[in-house]
Amino acid sequence: MIHNSLPPTPTRPVGTSQQPAGQHSPHATAKKPPALLIGIGAPVALVVVLALVLAMFFLDKGHSGKTEAQTEVTPTETTSETDGAEKTPTESATEKEPETEKNPSAEANPLDGKIAAAKAAGKQVFTGTVQIMPLDKMADFQAKFDGQNMGASAQALNPNSETYSNEYGFLFLSPTQSITAGSGDGMGTSTRNCNIISLGYRSSDKFGNTLEDCLSEWQPHNGKTVTVAIAYLQWPSDTSLPIGAPSGEVEVLG
Image 1 (cartoon, one colour):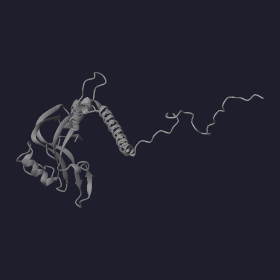
Image 2: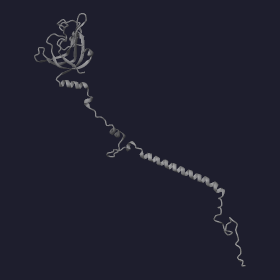
Image 3: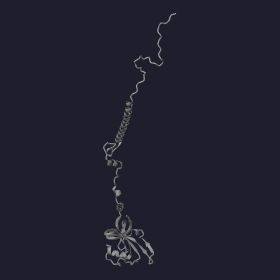
Image 4: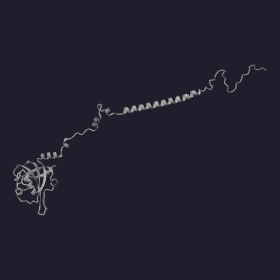
């Protein structure tokens, strides 16, 4: 019987390394860093992180401010879409709200237009004060101010002995004017210096009852200055009052 002369292979305990003695195994556990390095590294890392966060914050803020500055439009940077020239705030406002050209005819006195239209229609235009007076006061007024009857007596100014309860209206012109009117007999015209134009009368009986009233439309103008237009004037053909005053269809312009 032959026996194997080879020596038996030595066995190793389970879990032991085959690395020869004196050499470190690559799977050996690495040595832990000293505690001092760990204590210093943590604060440094925290500072670095904070620095990065602050840097990003200021960079973002600076970028936002730059963007706002670029989008902001100043009054002097407003440009025209047509020629690109700089416009001042006043010029820009003028382009947005152009001024309406003033119309001289629209601003003219409306009375001037009425006077012009009346004259164009061949009417005579007069400006005077409306007076409504009872007979005695009117006769006295004519004797003092009427160019045709200055100094005349009350009897001369009331030849028909009309009742003193009657009232008379007239337009008093100052100064005396040269008036052309149709003759009392209807034959042609004549021109005289006159400052009273008859507007009508209001008659009443002895009890004060109104018999005829041609002054109702003139009552609101009594004592006021008005401008009138008259298409046709005629000198009196009799001794109607006011003595010598022409009359006609009178239109109040203003």
